[in-house]
Amino acid sequence: MRLTDSEWKIANCLWDKSPMTIAEITQELKESTEWTKYTVITLLKRMEEKGAVTYVQEGRTKYFSPAIDKAEAENEEVSTLLDKVYNGNAGLLISNLVGSDRLTEEQIEELRRMFTED
Image (cartoon, rainbow, N blue to C red; front, side, top):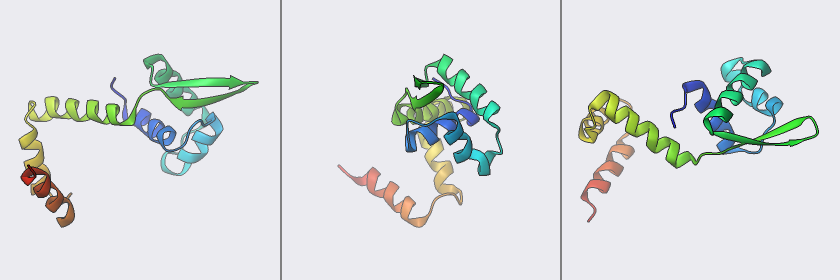
């Protein structure tokens, strides 16, 4: 399942703390997104249709939870990136990361250890 950038923001919110109400999600993302509750409602509806979130209704309040595992969603995103940008070549992705300023020396050393372990 492919999530949009906006849906990732909500999914990360729910993976960190769930269940959450629409008001709680809106408040949590307010500073970084400036979304209104109506934007959050629209995104949650789309995510529900995709099967990315579920909710339990108590009275008039809906409590949302993720319906997908974070690790599975991350793996899907990496696979999509590999296919789209690197034609499936993970070595090119790693080479690009190591050659960029995005990784710290500690992260590069961690990669070295992963590749040299038996």
